[in-house]
Image (cartoon, rainbow, N blue to C red; front, side):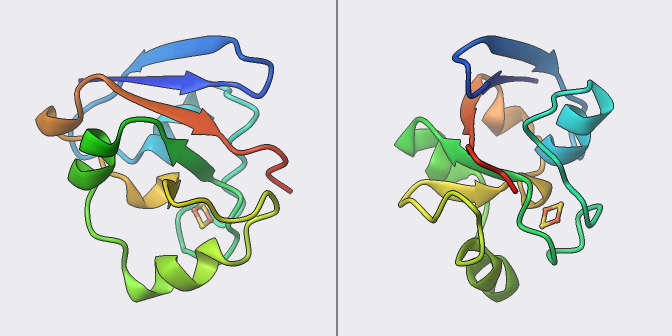
Length: 107
Ligand code: FES
């Protein structure tokens, strides 16, 4: 399944991500600099912040856990209604075609 990241400079990167891999892992593995992911997915850094563009995908992107909910309040950019931490968004067939904007700033 595919994900498109929109960088802060508006350039787009499309990646094919295996089911079960988080969007943070996919981004960092491909050198997408806007996704920092300092804590490696441990929900302690909030440097993997993305905005999910389409509400339909937002709804399918999985439940926001209490820990993610708390960490979203510590993002550098500030929280938006469509904010997610990309280490918590795990690729599935349902998410094929999802588009996320990378938060700016991330740190
Ligand atoms: Fe640290 Fe997502 S990688 S909170």
